[in-house]
Length: 116
Image (tube, rainbow, N blue to C red; front, side):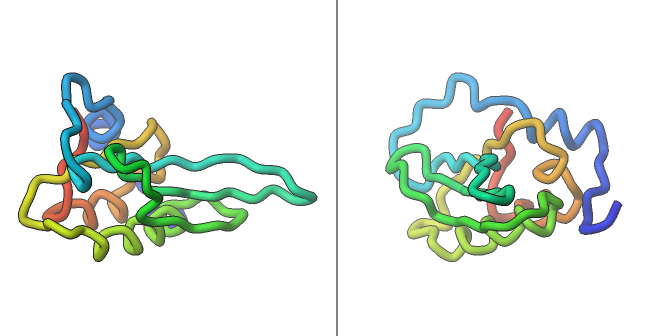
């Protein structure tokens, strides 16, 4: 698909599971990414990456297209904000194909672990 939305079922299973049993004890330990639908005249889609501990939005993008490249912008914005990149970061998202795409998961590799 256009925008890097190629999807593999095994990739979806690995990325879509919630962070069960994870006790969030510090900022930068768990990030949650999601797309929200807002209609103000025309459809506006904010994609946010939020730190689960501090509730701070660490990355965001706004637009009208929800392909993987759209979601990638928020992740690219968030990654440089990590204050302790040597510590493990778990990334959680819903079951959206954007977050399971090769484009998105390739950026996560080496930067974060998918929630399991």
